[in-house]
Amino acid sequence: MGELRQDLGFDDADAVYEALIDMIGDLDDDTARLVMAKLILLLANHVGDAEVIDQAIAAARKDVSD
Image (cartoon, rainbow, N blue to C red):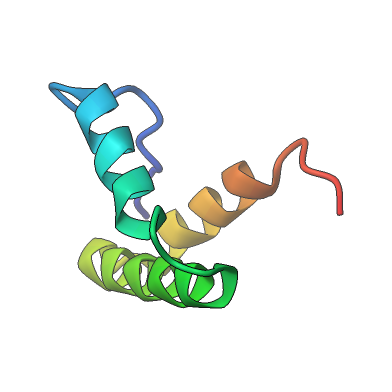
């Protein structure tokens, strides 16, 4: 069983954040959602551990209302 890493894992977290924002900055909402979904699926495939992905989903949804 894997464990979701929640400590900072980037040398330059601000640069990663900027890259994510730049990825969708010039896109309309529907296209931005498509690109984000594709990125999520690529990263989930890279992780390759369903339990870790479930933990990430729970962490992402925590304290978020609909």
